[in-house]
Structure formats: structure tokens, C-alpha cells
Length: 130
Image (cartoon, rainbow, N blue to C red; front, side, top):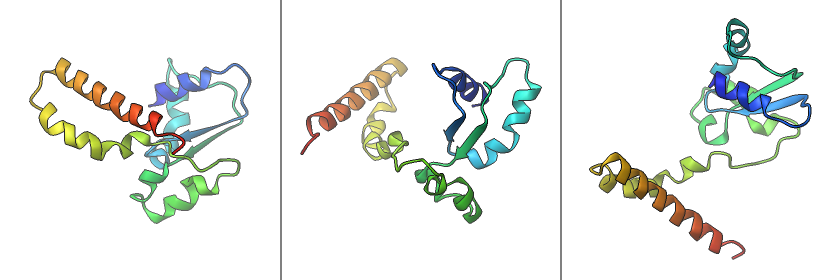
């Protein structure tokens, strides 16, 4: 995760003064993140003034109550309401396919899952505006 965050923060065209990091366990991950980056020969951060770790709404309900006030998007000024964890909302549909895909070869299973996601995305696309 540290590697992914560092690389994502390096990928920008204009200077940033802050970054919002939405991560399932941001409350625990953020404790040692800066120290891990400092101790690593391979990780680096751009000159940011502020990293804002938050936990997405889907996962926040499973955390201890003290996480809510510190890591909820509801209390971060300038953030909007979003559904950034769309894959989790598709699990119920994915579970219908997974029972038959479990006995398939790895390549066949990947194709079935890809087709299922494409079908789901197509249905959402043609249903927009209704």
C-alpha cells in the first residue's frame, strides 16, 4: 500500500498542497506511513503540505466509534459525498457467478468474471437517465 500511495502521489501535473487518501484501514495505516517512507530507500513523497487519511463509508461502520469522528468523509472540509467503493456493492451479484466459476480453470474464471462485469457496466450505461 505504501508503494502504491507514493507512486500515485508522484503522478500529477500540477503541484498539490494536500491529498485525500481513502483506504479501508487508513486509521491504522496512517500511524506509521511517514516513518515507513523515511526508512525506505525506495519510497518517497512529493512536497505535500498535508495528507488526509480517511476510511470510506462502507468500511467505517465496522470500525471502533472513535474512528468515525477522525476518519469520516463527513467531517473533512471540501470533500463531497461519493461512492468510492463500487466494487463492494457488486459483490452480491458477483457471488451468483462465483459458485459456478469456482470449478473453472484460472483463465476461464477470469473470462467469466470479465464478461459478468462488462454486462453489469453495459446495463448501467444503457440505464442512465432513466
